[in-house]
Image (cartoon, rainbow, N blue to C red; front, top):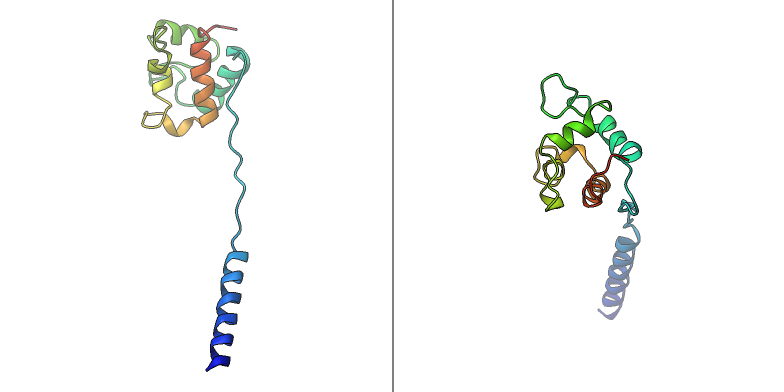
Length: 123
């Protein structure tokens, strides 16, 4: 019986070691939050071009985000709340729960909010 207990403990120990050794942790990089001044021309418009303009192009869906008119449309269309940046329609549409959530990464959300907080400048 003593030998059986010893073999049982050894097999159980090897099983546990093998179980944990077989686990593999996948590294998923966390997107960096943007820092510094956000440029409309160099960061915001490329985001719109890549993710938004295919639908928001002035042919039916509100808010034309084509480069030639996007800044003016955002400013005059009530999409920026200067008193509460996080309440800006441009931002609330892309955050989790917003209707455009799937089209923006967490980095793009952070960038948009930071751009609004910085005064939503056409720079």
